[in-house]
Image (cartoon, rainbow, N blue to C red; front, side, top):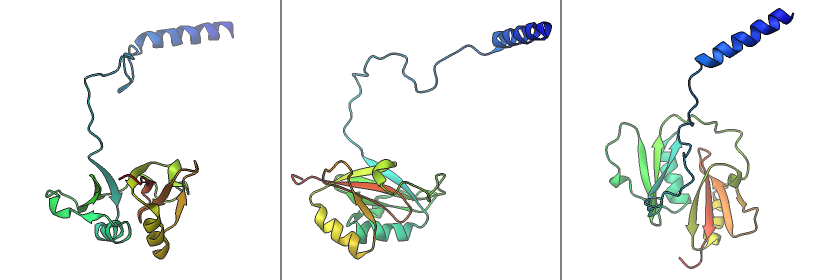
Length: 163
């Protein structure tokens, strides 16, 4: 048994010598110094995956009140649409979804989500209720509403009266 243990330790040591040298994982910063030269202007757009472009476009425009800007969309090799929400766009992309649609958290604030500012939540609440769209309010107590589109993409609407 002692001889076997010695052989295992020797074999493991030999394997460690053959292992590649250790290096940081891709995307892990090598220093803690801030990247001072990077300047951001904001989020230009967000993309969402959907099963049916026309169905999603109707939801984003007729229910959420966004503006259809599909005329600005370049000719891409898959169906899709663009909608405007204030200064930003949402790109609706009809592509296979690699993520599960079912089994997502009930409250969108506990899932990946897109956050948008909105002047007043009341008109949105009324429209969501009229269309039987389930929503939840922020668990922090602030004036924010969470819902999902027809494909399970979570969205947050933050009331910002001074828009």
